[in-house]
Image (cartoon, rainbow, N blue to C red; front, top):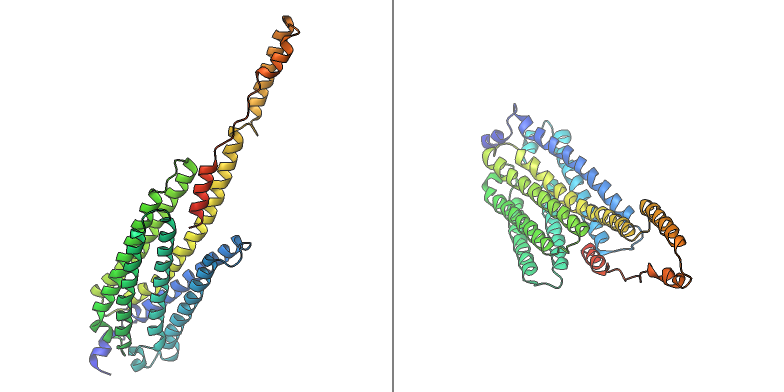
Length: 339
């Protein structure tokens, strides 16, 4: 083992190398548990809808997320349990580490494609140029990710990662750019989909805020990985953050699916309540006032009532019921909820 190899893993600085990896794997396991909860909630709230595209997407993401978790657990077990006294093994890159990075890029690429699908759906009836442009950016980004994975498999020991750090910078940079493009496009399309109804517009505003927050979170993780690799190349802190990147993407997408469901339920409940209140289905205070007015008018009619006025009075205060135009709002909500 060369002196340069020993320099990457100093005996008195295990905390910033494999200690950081241990913390990263532990945090990633917690995030995987959170994604399990979110997947369970989604299937519970959509158990009567049959097998849909969104359910297949959730199964796909959960499967690769579980595989990614198993690989990074094997990685830390290999270094800290099996070979904790073998410094030659500690310097070498185990196969599960390389495969976990490849699975991570598959997860990120899958989430990006699912967002592109949503952009395509929201832009229905509008120009498709924007959604096609975003799709082309994501496809081109996959080529950059393939270059990074190829460079990773050329590395056999951890010091070799420094030689190909340009590939990691390029890949994470394109991921950040793709996040910004997707978040901006979704916010623009949602903003142009406002209907004028307060409940629907409020729902759209909440989705826009969520998309901006998650886009910022994933971008911050990518940028933090680049910065820590550039500033602390002899530590594994950048690998620790990279372990969390895939988990953040999966949880953000699953949370978006669940947020859409609960947001739609709350919107429907509020619309139903305001609809009934507007049209006198449940307005007890108005019924009391109406009864008092009717008694007052009846007493006045009793004083000077003409027999021929009964027919007139019986129909004087009857108003023909007009059809209520709520079709537009319902159509907009249904169209938006199908995204």
